[in-house]
Length: 317
Image (tube, rainbow, N blue to C red; front, side, top):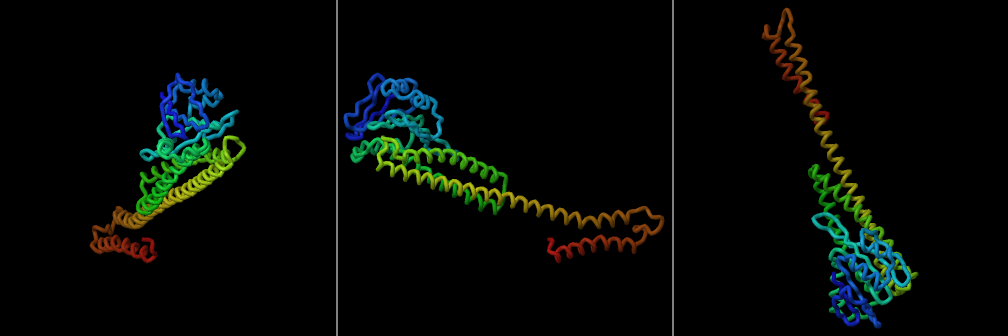
């Protein structure tokens, strides 16, 4: 896989081969982007930059939580971009080596923040003023800002769920509630480590982070704190939606049970009268006497109607 080399001073870009030595900075800032890194790419980095084996092992395996590791002469940073496809959340992991005059990024999937930054470096000559730490900030800040629209979409879905639950609670709504709940948990697990990583970069303990750039990382940290709070708020709203769903289902079940109970209560005296009138008397069997039959028929009609009227007055129906 080819390695994209970008010079921030001139804005020039070219492809490096694995046989070539790593480019010298000569006073400029170098950005090397390695998409879909192979073992050969990792070996090239180990040979040309002498990176620590633990950091290189993370680049081989990916699936790392966001973190900042300090090594002699450089920083190793792992951050995640959150994307949403077909209603499911996923992460695009970015591994970064940050030195005094270079930035090396490795990733398996195309990341929108990297593509935008590459175009800006080529077209906008103001990027020649960037340090490597400022370039990393621009990339990470774009990745963080992309989370806000995702949260807005999820909040809209939660609002729509609340309206649908009040209208008619169905099993499909329950599945959507738990699906959103899993997404919010996934998002919180992703944002939490990123927040901690930005807090570390905002600290001026590392020589590769300028004190002026640290203020920008502090701003990104504040954005992540806000995102984390929004996630917690959305989880609370979703919990309220789940409570509303369960209450609606419970109320509907109570209504059904109440109606069935009323029907059973109304038909109970009818069953008693029919059973009593059909008993095998030696005399005065109702069907042997028109008067007894009329009384029995009248009771069968009057008793349920009287019970129904009484239920209505008690506001039970």
